[in-house]
Image 1 (cartoon, one colour):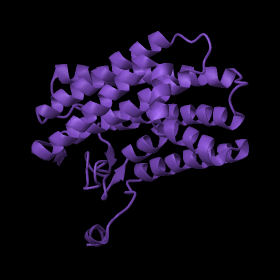
Image 2: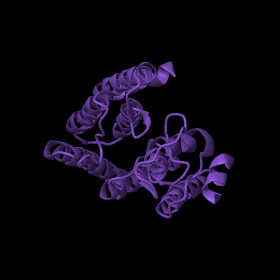
Image 3: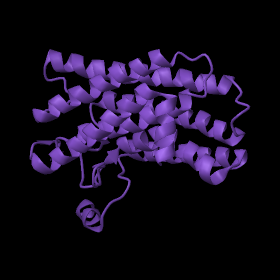
Image 4: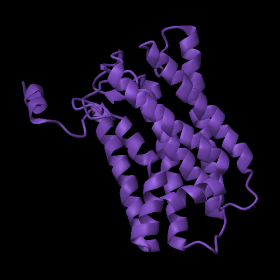
Length: 263
């Protein structure tokens, strides 16, 4: 682990420190969930900024690692695009959480509506830039890297991009659930609904293909066919949970909740 951190810092010091800051802030938000009782949509308000900060930490470190492989890539511009846009999202989400207000889907005032649109634009720009990185991986060859690992990066980025844009399904509905309005349940930190379809599940699964697939391929699969097969199955898992959510069905339902639904 120490060797990985040292190598990552060498590859991209800027995103390394940005990710480290996001990790530190994420743990601060997690502590605040234990000390501050303010709630949004029935859950502790600081869970949302925690999830965004931690997810940004994972994204920053993953892209810092992958972009190193690209020759003639303007990594400095990419770094600051990520820092400014995703940093803006984390700060705004945290500010709104401190007020006990929603950051997403909030059209209650013109200012909040503009900020919601600004966050959507920021996420879109980062996703498009990541898609460009994916295009570079598909259009180039990497003689010094195992082919199965390259394909894992390619497919990981592809699935990430597709299910990042799945966020528009939530934005268009002004709700992350189908069959209820922004329902949350006591699923540890993720808070996925146990009573309605939850679009956040496929969003979560798909976006983290960026980390899961390359790690699996490099350390476990070590084979192109196995990597492609697992990537297809992983993408199908994200797709199935998306369709399930659109049908208003929760991923899992407890026995108590099943009885309530029957009643």
